[in-house]
Image (cartoon, rainbow, N blue to C red; front, side, top):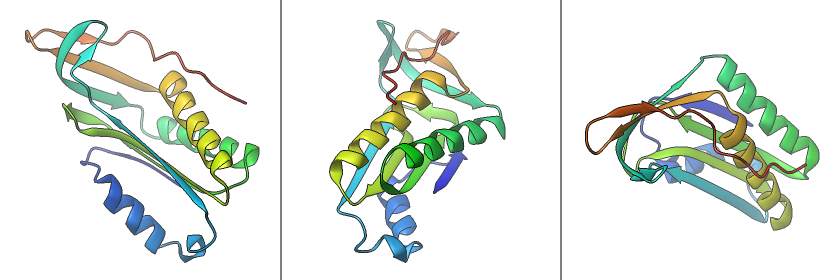
Length: 150
């Protein structure tokens, strides 16, 4: 299991490949690998957005993400979890979050991945400041409501 919060650009496919290469126990053990990539979009709350500043509380955020991943590993028969979340200045189409789950069977991988992503979006301690296309800025006041399972 690996949890990371970074201000660096996320090259998702490179991150996944490097993780798999450094974890040979995954080779041949998984029949499913479910990947979710969340990207910066150009709108929120019916307004056009040009960029975003994403803040977190170091230590607390990683601990929260670690707890979500551990809960998923307890609830589903999965082999491993990788979560990489971006902070700092984010531009349109940048990857904000990567959630990857390895499992022997697809159902467990799908369900665990969705659980992690929904909990992350609805409860994780991140703060978003959006820059609108007209140059105004605003703090996003609430997390995205999630469909948290389990």
